[in-house]
Length: 370
Image (cartoon, rainbow, N blue to C red):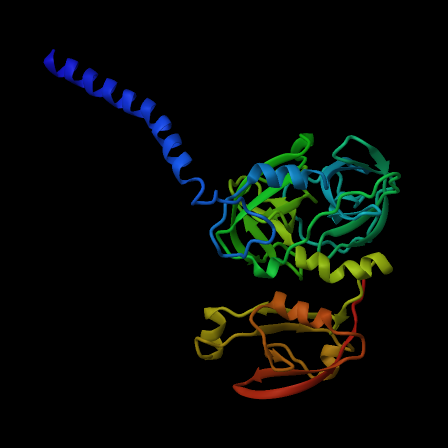
């Protein structure tokens, strides 16, 4: 019994102390407020890497104004997703699969790219944050990166515009915020971290996804992934089925690199070496080819006759180690380098063949649309 009373006495003492603490803290703050400035919240001008206050509420309020709801009618039903305003005159970035008529109710992961001819939806509606609705036209699209640009004709005041960041400067572990319309629930905000960069293996030749554990669900597609400074660093695009905390976004720099072409021509023209199949090398391939452990590059597994690759002299089982002296580390990087070259450009391919180094000269052709 004595122990019980003693415990009650200690508990009451702790409660009294906690109640007195705020008053004491206020008195201390009043004495020191003139000498010590209050901490300021994070702003877009904060330097990455420095400690800052994560103002999720402020970021959400600011970015929500540029996030839109995107609905389109496809053969399989209605596509529901998100987008964000990138130009005050009415340009909106979103996912290509939301305007692909063959998709119909896209809900989970990116499927392997098919060879069917693209068929676009004919009815797209955009709903702004303030509730206004507009019919949207398709300004441009790029199936390879799952990016599309819509256009609406808005009257009155210029539209608010998203602040685009630099996805190349992202660091794993940074806070990120996903905003969109999952399952039709408008302007839902979720918080997480950047789990990884450069994720590949989803069937696209330009796969280069950001991975996050911020919740991304059906309907988030096309919405922004935002960093702690309130800048858009990614376009939310997919979540793997039967998993938790595995969501993926397209780096915003991918959009920035093709946006001029999408606005001017509606499509993206890329350099190509023709029908050239490559794969990343792993320890098994290094062992089979008796290569040093530090060897990097892509292995040629197929070359089609009559293509720029074949005319350059590339053969099956060649190991491409560099393009114009730039080391090759993955097939995605190799594809991006080739795609960035202009039609007719001359390039030098450094290869390993039967243990010997060679340099092959190739001329870039134009990507063949399937």
